[in-house]
Length: 477
Image (cartoon, rainbow, N blue to C red):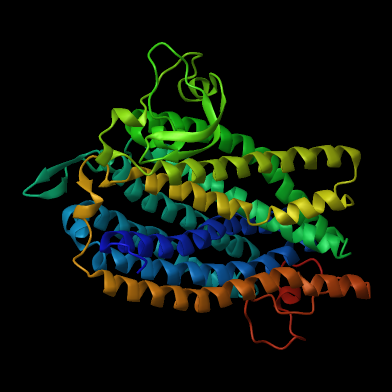
């Protein structure tokens, strides 16, 4: 297929499936916590707007959660089918970590998900909120185990190679390896940011359509507050993560920065734009800012770090790719900060919900959180190459013995099926978002705030039944 080797096709196939998968858990993590906050606000203030927003977003959460589970199962099987030598070599580490995820996070989510989605009028308000919180915690626990496994592959610790296989000798070092805390924090905050941008874009979309009602304003307002508070935190976490990466994976940093050689005693400029040429061993058309790379990566005016030429050619990541994926991530982060600051200015002027230019910008930024997550993930994974376990096992030694023809065929099948299945799911989820909380909009138009639709997500109950109205503790019951 297009002249790719079996190894390259195996990497492309895994990259394709994980790219589809990663966007769903990210939204699941953010939406689960958002739902917990909405229900908590309703219990505290007894304001039906928060309750109705909970019902609206729980429908979207249910669809997104289902797609995340399905895409995750497919991805997990590829460890055995396409990367069998890696599984045999490192299975004693990655296998238990993924099992712990199932035994803790998956069972926790599965145990309380039914109560959260279908138990609104079956259990008491406090118990229902507890179920929502447990689902939110479950999503975070799931991310913890997955990132512990992946972080070990980035910065392996607590293990030894015995008889050609990795054997754990200290599970605390395996789990809490040097990059784990930074990557867990960075990814979790990225999920919250992506969800805030998603929710904010939904609110902005409806305001532009003339649906200027209090629930829609609350959606946009909460999203913008999250953006204002979390974006600076994410920038700080990214800086700490970068310093950790420089310490343990300096070749990745050199590739991200597009630096080939650094002269002793001289500062390192930041290359804003350019084209790293792996064959020529130089970054062409470079636009530089003096000293800035030294300041960012070493916090010193003339700080030094290794260039790509200090590493053997076979140990260098593909700088052409990670240079640009990193800049896409950072560039979107700057735009997120701009959106948050703009929202503060408009909030001060009391025009947050009227500025059409701002609202259009918020809509355009809707997918930016997910794009930034994908760009960051590509930077992390491609930057680790040519290692599957950094410094321990090369990627070429991890791939299964499949022909390029077989991998080409299965890749094409994956593309067709994924577009059909997940394209349909995403399309349906976006239609729900675009339609908005129709029950709230209808009741606003009719001058009444009694919901006309069932509170249970994806319910087939007739429209004249509303469990939310009859729920014990509901203020309009």
